[in-house]
Length: 370
View 1 (spheres, one colour):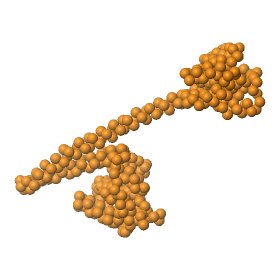
View 2: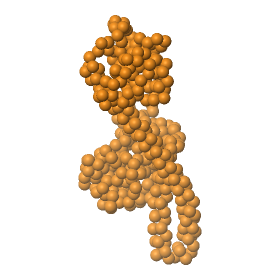
View 3: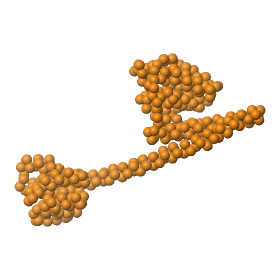
View 4: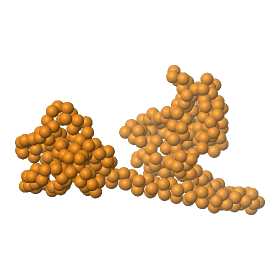
């Protein structure tokens, strides 16, 4: 709807009939005060405003309208038969007008301008409504994400309790004399224990993702020896995978500032992935080198199936798994996402180099603390 504001009734009527004849809905006001009352109650697509009116003139009305948040974007066209000098035209634009026409005006020109500004106003309105709808959808999605994270956190904690109990009963069974003397039973218990370890790792990953999403993952930063970090990690994983050979490449007696437990978690993830995706290779390289930009690079190289180049950019995304290997190897695709978050919290960078059938090299780079 268009609002026409003019203190002269004949001007109001003629302009109203002209616009209505061209299929516009029109409202009128015969003073600045009346115009403001209507603007505060109704949203208009366009305001055609006379400049010289008794009491409150058009410039004052425009300034007040531009200060009202709901009408600040409403286009205003000034009409004036008296104030036709440049200084008045300039003031019209300064007070919020988008055009200034002097009387007598060409009806065709006025109609063209009205159509243009009306269309722009309707487009802006549609854009605003779309933005509001999108904002609501984003808020709706955030609520769902929060509920999902809350569910994952609660479910993970609840699963921890029975898992601990099962682990305890298994240990009791392993200590029984009849178990120690029964090779088949011992083998079954070992397999059950291995599956429990996988379930425990899965629950731990779910808990970590929940902490990441809620911003509650804690870090204990301190000075760390790179060699100590790597050697401790290799020692720990060697006990779990005794048939594999973990070869050290490089020897960097360098300090970094970070969370030793979390960085070891990253290396463990890289190493377990190397074991998983290189089933026909027992040798894995753990590499470290000092870079020219005062960083240390730590990585794990396997000689397994490799990864297609078009998949490399997505590997560190949450729940992403390479389609070609997803049916062969278990996992939910959370480990590398957690690694990414840990390295980013250390202000480091992460990455992967790989070729199909030529193995993979997963690495991260961290600043050296001199």
